[in-house]
Length: 366
Image (tube, rainbow, N blue to C red):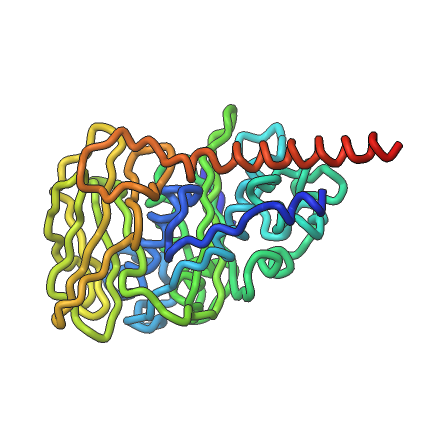
């Protein structure tokens, strides 16, 4: 069954500036769900064509073509923090806690500590140090605004399988005969196909002893000042096939879109939409047998080349989803750069040194 529904130390943490959609801590499942969301918005009638009676509001209820949702790191952090917290709550159930409000009153510095000092676990994120499923703590909007500048909606799902399945739970949920308006029966679909313009997606796998992990989406109406041409891209499995897909959105049509996997480039075909607002993909690429590096490139009709990610490479079937210091032109064991995998260790060392120095100064004063 699936369900859808200290202070001085912080100042020492450096601020890492990533390009659009970059970051090794973003789960692969988050990237997949972001791509699928923008694919659905590219042509809603095609996206809902197999929804049947579940989409009781009718295909004409939604605008046929919707602008994409841009990735927002603040929204992503809010969504991932909440998924981590819900997934960390101990219970006798095999399903995780599922609620939009935080299951405790969050500490005022919860966002500042996330993720390197506190990953969302109740012991460090809650004022009381504990959380209980069903309790009403910090509201959804209050929590999201601790991380991001705006908030418009949130989706939650518990899932035991692929990111694709979690997304389809939302998109094809049973509207129970509802009309052409948002309600609690069709709200996940309406959020995906709504008027928001930015998104962050959190994703956790099932904990040991549990059957389900959590997928989360947080939305807002903000649009980036310099929106990217390639809004999303990922490799994933649907019900039948392995796909590598990317979403292109520009006033200048695309003339060629490719994916390069471990140094081998393949041209992608348009699977939905138009050359100005379309999804390009291939389901004929042989599945890599080990962790693989890949990136997408799009050339428009004016000859301008755009790459996604802008720097580094995406990773498929690995223990992270992005690598900062390899251009993807050769086979690799996908060993992450020191700047990525050692970051948490570096923070731990800084914290330890700081606390030792603070204690030493106190002893000297005494």
